[in-house]
Amino acid sequence: MQYEGWELLFFDSAKNFKQYQFDLIRNYLGESVLEIGPGNGIFSKELVLKKTRKLTLSELDTGHFQKLKKELNLIKNVKVVQKKINELDEQFNTILYLDVLEHIDDHEQELKYAFEKLKPGGFLIIISPAFKYLYSAFDFSIGHKRRYEKEFFLDFSKKNNINYEKIEYFDSIGYLFAVINKILNIKNSNISFGIKIWNLLIPLSKMLDKIFFNSFGKSIVCVYKK
Image (cartoon, rainbow, N blue to C red):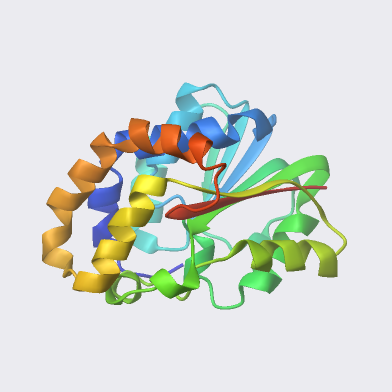
């Protein structure tokens, strides 16, 4: 997964949003977890802190791979590899694509490979940017090939006879920021302040998501079950 990683420095600092992501998926984390494209490892470290029994990190970017190996590979039950998912031999209880699937060219084939690597009863979890019409120059600059609607994940479920636990939008405040970014075409150099404000408003976003029944949001979460 080779793409520009400068934006991770900004988004990894959004602790409230990262916690929101974790809260959405915590109930689906099994004994063995595979995270695809963990980047700087912010979420991976959270999983370690929460005592995931077995954690495998698959990172193709050489810089991130070396950093992760140095920081996490010596921790018991944590393994860092530089392999594509179809090159892995084992199966997992949970597989995570957290803001990663939108970077992958053949995303449907990727999901099929991932489902093959799940143990029976396991969960495949995807979090990605939502709504095609919000795709912006900023998305392009950070390597996003697309944004997603619910229909994509529902269609994939139907075509491949895969059950799902949830498919819903979240982060309504982030949605408003994305709309503003789309309209104003905000440049990369100007996003830092906006990310700080957005992150501070995540508690409000969580409340609004419930009020509006997760009918819209900056992101989408999908949980498939094998």
